[in-house]
Length: 322
Image (cartoon, rainbow, N blue to C red):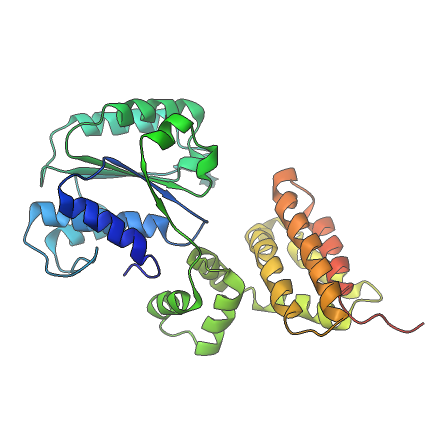
């Protein structure tokens, strides 16, 4: 299912039906809204239709029991390549390398196996280094016949202009609440309705962010942040405890997710307040949004950052009479 992106589905489907499908598609939009999922479903439908048997479903859906769909689900379709950062040590490589792109070129030079078509998905272009981008550009300039590229990008403005100019762009926006709820119902069938709605309100239209919040058990951190907003922290104990939880190396993923969570949390709380509390909350929102954006880029100390954020959150509480 591709939820919330009917326009993108229609544009791609119309191009496919016309018989003049562009060879490269730039899937642009915020992180976590379903761009890579769209690429997978579109590749599955195209390769399934090209190989047969015929599919009667509308849009880009493919029956789960279609033989091509089974191959793609198993990661073993010979005519589909997925480029992403490789595992390296205990984490992932810094970027998609030129070696990976050259191997993709070798794949593109081979005869397709199950239909006339071959598909490559790059997830994401933002993680591809300059040398690799130049190597990919050569393929986009002279694409082999019946070849389709899906280039996922969260920040398309940073890509080489020559790459953007050789792609047809599909724009993806943050999902609405109904689409978010539908996707979370499908992916978390045992989750309570209240918990789903909490994730919807915090995730800002990003399924990826909602899934990360659910996996990292951010509920206790959210509650502690709300307590600081509502009751303040006159002796610094609450913000110190919160900083202590997130300063540990083992808490790195929770710390990153907590930074993503905070602006939505403060904005949601601001909407419930009357003046002058709302004005203080709006001011806190701006400060939190700025700090949570720069902290990862500047590699600021997590404990110190969370402690500073706690002070900003505490400023929303009604000032105590001296």
